[in-house]
Length: 194
Image 1 (cartoon, one colour):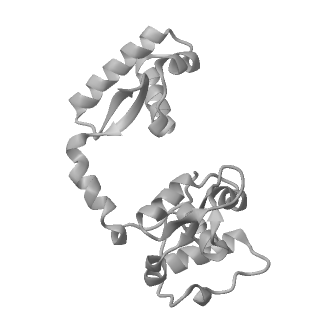
Image 2: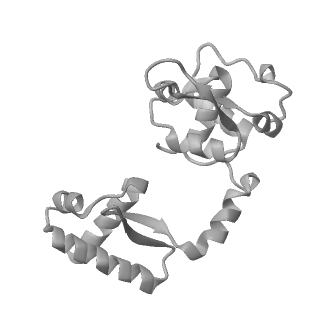
């Protein structure tokens, strides 16, 4: 594999490893190249990112490499975070919100069982938009967090109370439900995989 392709694969690995990051040894094993070569490639990538004025950088935290945003861009990220009306909900967030609205209080594992995929990112999005809240802890092993909708959820969707939600269909067609949710909540984004 050539040098540029290796850097591209490393960038992808850093991206999918998220906040946890990935260490040079893991990258070395995946790419089947020596660890010191991985470190050299990453150092070269750091320089490439700086020269190109990229909006992300590679940092090493606790011996793991991760992609992060640049500290000087924080004011822009804060504006994005404080303008929830400017952003729509992803399909994953809409599905998660619907499950919480109808089944609250509910744990993350119960939501994931219904959706069939992980929902941590969707939950974080909904929490940041104040559409859901932590509503205590469930009994049992680990005492998982329970989620419920908020007053802001009711206000955002023009509901007086939760009983104003339409009755869920008995024989649910998931594609129809997604289309209805998109129409109701105003999302036109493609589905998101969590």
